[in-house]
Amino acid sequence: MSLAGLLCLSGVAQAGERLSVVATTGMIADAVREVGGDRVEVRALMGSGVDPHGYRQTRTDIVAMTRADLVLWHGLYLEAQMEGFLEKLARRQSVVAMAESLPTDDLLSHAEYDDRIDPHVWMDPDLWSRVVLIVRDALIEASPDDADVFRDNADRFRADLAQLADYARRVTATVPDGSRVLLTAHDAFGYFGRSYDFEVVGIQGISTQSEAGLSRIRTLVDLLVERDVQAVFVESSVSDRNIRALIEGAASRGHEISLGGELFSDAMGPDGSYEGSYIGMIDHNVTTITRALGGEAPAGGMQGRLAGH
Image (cartoon, rainbow, N blue to C red; front, side):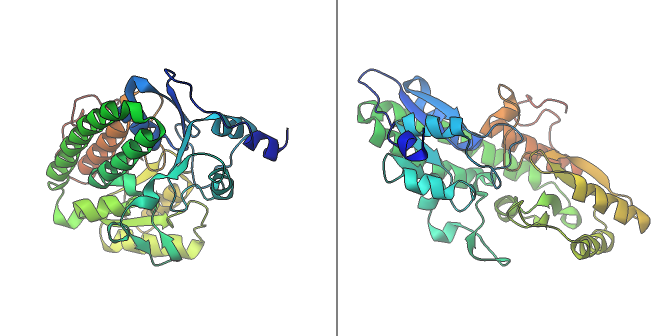
């Protein structure tokens, strides 16, 4: 069947049926599950370890989206390879870009990208809490009869996010001033750095589709040596090649750097795990960064549920 034919398959939920929602990223799907509860059935297109910057929709994805009652995507050019399809689909059915509705003043621009906004807003739980309201409103519009349920669930989830943000502020504040440099594979932690006062450095830019040349690696090795940075971090959805090159480059200069751990940047942890939830993802990142950079955080994280700590 042609793409045009698939686009004509869009379905509408029947009375009494659960709302069928397709979300591009795991973070959005998690918010839909929390807000929608048993009134929704949600499918995430991108699972653990999948990089949304380079992801292209499959035929199966297209069928799922065209048959869904509601399609939720992040926007801000995160799903760069899918944007054209999603915009076309929005002319035929209910499709909402979650982060596009955030006030411009709350968003970070990027010097390397003209007219582009850093899309990684989920790295700040307070900001993500506002996205949850956008999810809530999209669900209410799609299923008005369930409005009270969606409102109550959103309020509960946002209270949980407030506790997460409080935990993050408390433990990251224990990292010594001279150690507050967060170097990762790509520039996904800008909102985290703004919220918790870290200098954030990414080898690649805000998109993993940018390339890091040898001159960039040399510049960052100089920074690591001059600033006496003790730990750097890999990401679950990005190759560790550049991070390994940095560690080797610093070692050749007589500066030993440890691998602080693996962070979840553009995708959550494995399905069914604590780290496979939004709260678990951020708890893992906050706890891993704090402990690796000399701060104090409980080994099991905020809820004592982190694996491998």
